[in-house]
Image (cartoon, rainbow, N blue to C red; front, side, top):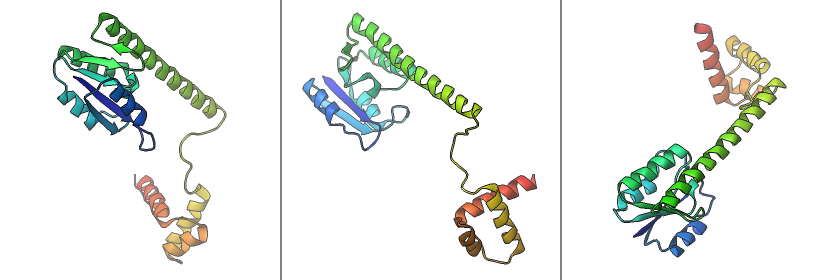
Length: 189
């Protein structure tokens, strides 16, 4: 029996192309879910793996639907092979029930991992370059130091309520309290 597995990373993405391809390839049962490929917990994939039996073939639309890292893919396909379950990726035309298919699986997985590593390397180089030019990554501070010091002085003087201080300075109360807690923690050490 051919058992399909389809996955999209976000709810905005459509499963339809994958489901159509899996149905056209003759899958008698299809499991599908919305989950990141990097997540270890993918209930529909686990259900598909629990469902397949010796002699069955697990079918995916593309190799990256099954996993993100080469190690993850190889472990999964090796587990299927040990259980005498085939693996077929429609887009890459990989069918591990043949020696040639097993070879192409490893080569295609290696290229996919290389592409991810090169992208990560370029991103890290871009971030390092930006830091050298004085740019910092991450989220901007909700309150600049000058505004917080002013709010802190007003708070410690107990002249106004926190609500009033925050309204005067254009701050959210929750944000002020978070910064106040961080300030106290730093000065208690």
